[in-house]
Image 1 (cartoon, rainbow, N blue to C red):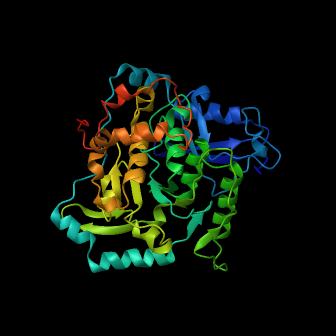
Image 2: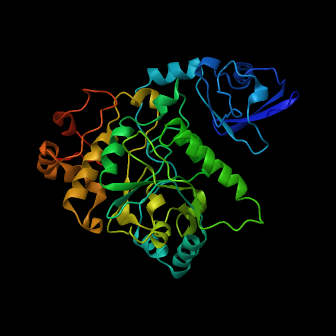
Image 3: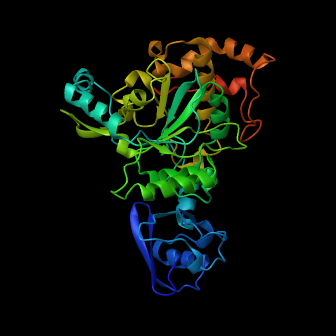
Length: 394
């Protein structure tokens, strides 16, 4: 519970930490937002505070007194929002999604470096030591879809008027369709604290599960404990037509030295495969906007277009809707994903679209999720789909 007087709250905004000091216990969340406005120039009505939690029995609202916030020294709060000036600038700009920062194409020397014995040993040690957080069942004979968060399904830095605009369009439909054939994992190059904050804002898993994981994270910091390698989180129930089975954070990544690029952090999928052998390169696909993240497993990675400038692109971005078709098709037609070139996923969809139409007409086909914006997608729209290389599917 917040202190009665002199409370200091640290808030992260646009990569910087701002400290709101000397808040009284009777001050409200709206008072906190007004002080943040003075520091950041983000108007209170544009502010979304991730990581803010109330004590049991209370609900977060602008009128809630600060004394009822569950704030500890380790609490991380992120401010998402924009100044009116920033909104005006973004809306006035014909925004083009930029290439991913700090990314590069692999050359032969890079590919050899990834397979050096010392790097493979790092993968093995990480898979043995990393503590996975499994929150739902892994189903027999399902494939595995691994999703990045930042700029893949969530625009975490661009100024926005609401959290809804930061979630990539058609995410729910893509997850619903994918869940028929795939177990779904989240792997972000951030801490578990931020993973929980972001997927909580997207309502991908229940708040009760998020709270349980947070509590487990706190308890695991005590050295007297010797936790199991997979966190014992009760499998959750949900009204959503999909579930997330696995949460993986930056601690599962490894560092690799490349002659031309220096030391880079990557996401080796073998960390998952070694611990959950029902998955492997033959049935796993990873979506990430940064190619180097799947450098250890380039045949399993699909580089998605970055979802940035959410204000501008929210109304037109259909990447996840097109990729849902690709996931449907390769699950239907391919027994071994290593034979695929995910770089040309759009061309694959165009070539095999007839199978997709038959699947949708089948009386046994899974029901389609309602689209985020009904009526925006049809087969003619998909003829203009662009794959991750920037080539059209013609």
